[in-house]
Length: 54
Image 1 (tube, rainbow, N blue to C red):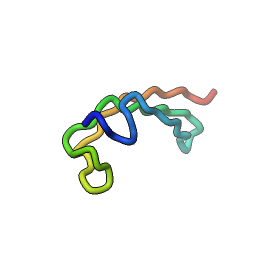
Image 2: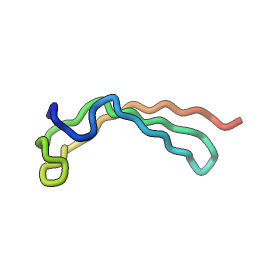
Image 3: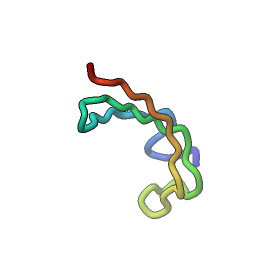
Image 4: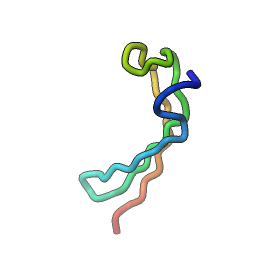
């Protein structure tokens, strides 16, 4: 599981329908193999940080 295209600690930002910004960060992949398309992980664990719109 060390050779994934998307690495742990990768993150991206989302904007919610209420204007809040959320940044999920991948913490680890569980199960699966190194081929993301043909052998995806069984689960992707992540942590999220949210900032509220003022």
